Length: 148
Figure 1: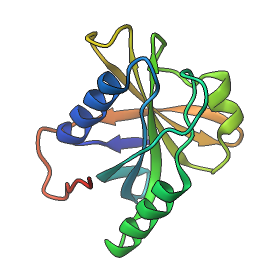
Figure 2 (figure 1 turned 120 degrees about the vertical axis):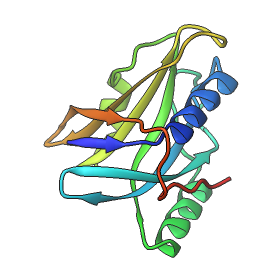
Figure 3 (figure 1 turned 30 degrees about the horizontal axis):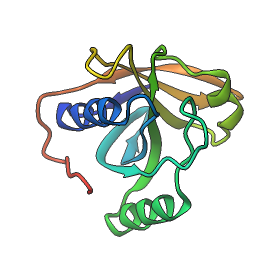
Figure 4 (figure 1 turned 45 degrees about the horizontal axis):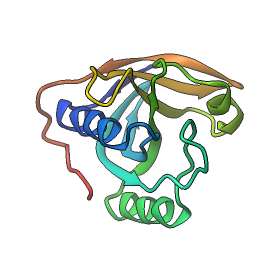
């Protein structure tokens, strides 16, 4: 499995992770699947309504707005993204407990401090576990759009 996430979108996730520090940022990824390759076309940043700084919960209004936008564009929500402030770019126990949709992508942006370098990794939830996904971030792609 592979995710094509254009650099403009990747940079936006990294910026959101830094801006939200020490809380987790979160959002949804709009795109489509072409066999075993997922292509990200837009990001839908979301309000994190989780009580703790070390978890995320996407506001339901933001989730429905992203779903509506994706459908309007003839695409779907193929995954989510969130940050791990002071953490690692790997699914946490909380992520594992919250996952459930088969073949849904999870991007995790880890950063040691607000002004630190962000490391991004991608995973797919399959058969009750997270599988590592190859992440390709090309310079430009004509299919990229971005939601605000």
